[in-house]
Length: 115
Image 1 (spheres, helix red, strand yellow):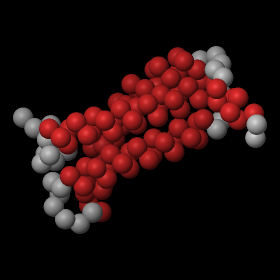
Image 2 (image 1 turned 180 degrees about the vertical axis):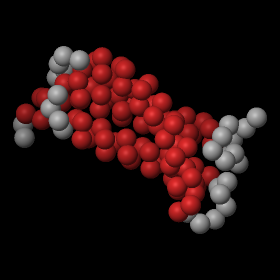
Image 3 (image 1 turned 30 degrees about the vertical axis):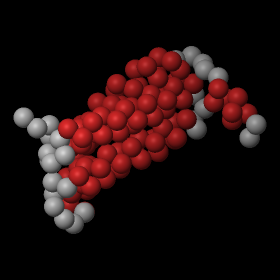
Image 4 (image 1 turned 120 degrees about the vertical axis):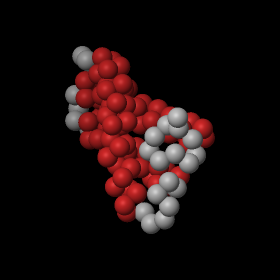
């Protein structure tokens, strides 16, 4: 167990490349995935479909999925996969920030940016 913090703090071949390229790649998947997850959450949550809680639940669901994928990759032991895990976590945090901005500007839009 003492090797885990040392392994987490070290980089290896492909670590930073995977982290750098993984963030925009995963962020694009999160944005595309929102249009799949949001209608599913909308169908599961009762109430007004334009409710902000539906969008917040969809973004939260995607953040949890991203973190679970990142944990699985981080545990693999490969430096490139740990770098990709860092990129995924970064993309999940950025997506939550973009969602907060979207909600602040566009509180009543349903899955889209206002015209």
